[in-house]
Length: 202
Image: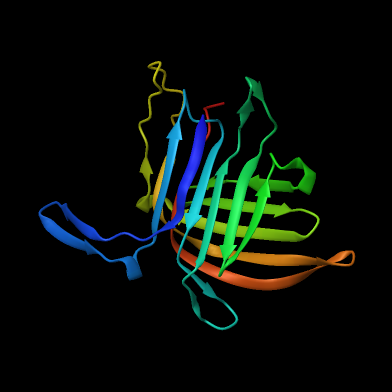
């Protein structure tokens, strides 16, 4: 599987006709996102989380140039499965923070879990390197999500619990290393996030 985020935060303008009702999409209120998946199957597990509607918890100020993107979890490189890994990018008002396992020289580490509950699915992600750390805590109501009926190009249906939603919300905390500890840069609350989670039946 390959994943490319062409637009972590994308401004859209247009019109959508759904069930006989017209909706207008305007750039200033759009939480748009654009990516592409291709290959032979989704990884297991598959995790994706994007959020483009953030406010600074300390000031209440909307952050128009801020975006979070998380994806991956079961990468395969040259046919070799790697331990559970994510690609994480957080663009904060002009500055990009990134935790990318492929850039091994940065010493990026991470832990994550996506527990499923009757009323919600959660995305709990911690990542850190020599300079910065991020803690992500998002969830999405189960009744607002769809269960994707995904069949791979070979006709196999391995994912039977692949959930997709557009109402993920939560918070993230960003830190910078100071000495042997961490100092908080800020805490940011997000809403209207796109999200996916799936894992093959055990």
